[in-house]
Image (cartoon, rainbow, N blue to C red; front, side, top):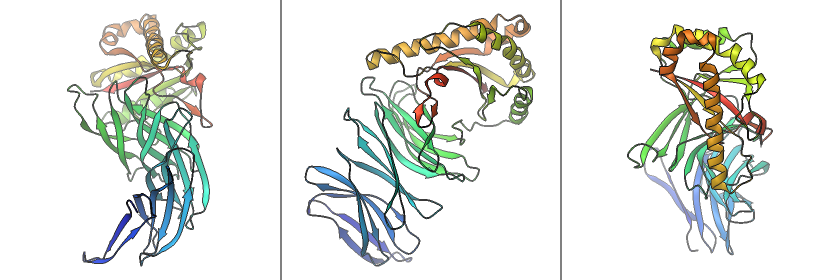
Length: 382
């Protein structure tokens, strides 16, 4: 055909055992493969049929012969990125499909050793999104890394998605600023954290640079941990042990269920003020013990995706709204009587930022719009 998949199998000493071509009269592109454990492999590819490409998998035996071929057709253009073997002996595929706005969206497919479909999940979003690499952790959950790009904004965010074993979305995080950022690969580490690699153009010289990070399985960054880190983390856990509404993340982000805003509002309600009056003095008291090691206490505002406006205006309005939410939290907290004795030091470490809808909260595969309209605090160590 116009192009074929070409495989070569080598003996342990590097000598060629066999080499074969696979394909149809049209264009066939091999994308990835994974060993099956019996000397063979599952080949992931896309093949042209008339004017479209079809996603397919083929089981190749140890001799290079095809045991079976399975196709997974879907309307519109199809792309394939990765196939991995699960701990249960099944196979998970990362691919993409085209939504109604002609944008690539994420598609996950799980098959058994015979190529039969176990489940398929298609994740609709109003942006170009794909997962370049996927892995499974020790809990059996799925993590994927890639990018998300809104055409109207132009920039590209590096994307991390986390799903349960059935493909239900548990959380996502986006990284990057106002330029192009994307993740290309990831590796599961011994402690159920993930090493992730990609590129970024969001740094000072605007050139493409290698970007490496490490994440916990709750989406928080694994940070360099000086000796006092564990003491600070445990002190925070102990201080708020009687307050279930407070959650302390491993990367020292702090959330309070009472710091959620109404749609389109940044105004502090009486309930917000009551929460801050109780919460901030306790937090300040703990932080003051470690003030020589704390560089920054960030107050980060977030929004849901709700705003009836064109995409560019929608993003800008949400960016202003999220920053206003953070600023109002800062303004009220800074003037609390109980905080004033540390006011000079707090003025040196406090800052605000607005992230619009860059880190949404999900529940049952859908955006949780209420919980996404929140403010988080983040402790940055020296």
